[in-house]
Length: 354
Image (cartoon, rainbow, N blue to C red):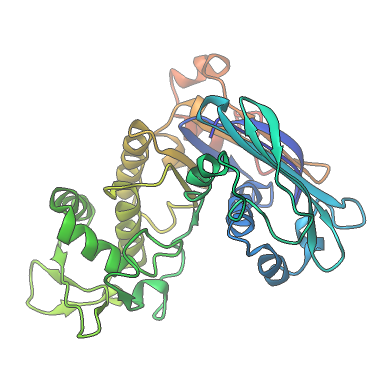
């Protein structure tokens, strides 16, 4: 993704943001970091022709429009891919109960070349026979927002998954992680071994996963310890360890998506695990995987360059986004890490008092 324009979505009044290989959003609670990330959840549902259902489940159009339906009546966005060779632009208008597509353009070399809008309540991108659509679809397929926050007794990590039907990609909350890891174990042994060794680096007691599909080819996440013959489940791991397993699987998978979008991946992680996470993020970016994430962790921010960081501030109800600049912070970075500057309120934006 080269850049994105969003207008009229939640706390985002009107932005154009150039995106780099690594994009880490920092800022106060409520500044709009999560709103930016949930846009990709919104986009995924729009592309999958599930927009009406998504809007209803989120409480209606009023909750998605900037400052509500009384102030804003439409959402617009434009996304550019592969050095602006292809792009996608949409304008949807509040129709009361549902949004209605006014414009839905396929872009080529920055120009709105084909309007495929059908003036209905769902997108036409998956149903059009326009040849340019397949290029756009390849990118839209990868825009899944991940969050591995739920580690309760009945969390997604405890669910059964089918070894074939649930093995194609990792689901957004990790509910198919058992089948996904089983697929990697069976088909990509080197990658699987790398995942296990990375987990062992922060959980030395961990020996391996234990795969035992039932007769109907369903499997549950299980593991074995170096110190026992007992078969354990995800509820026998700490919250931080199970989240780290999911993060390691996401970032080291053999056939990754073009983008990884994740909210607060550092939650519950030990500082050493955060350092490992930072390394996996950089490794993913080196593999041409664009990483977009929001964080509250100064420890995580310490591992990155200013140009990787985008500060978010809420000014008069509007989210404002600014990418940091190394030259502006050069004097401070001689003595402090970037996360320390954030903690000390030396950064001019992204602070709780903004």
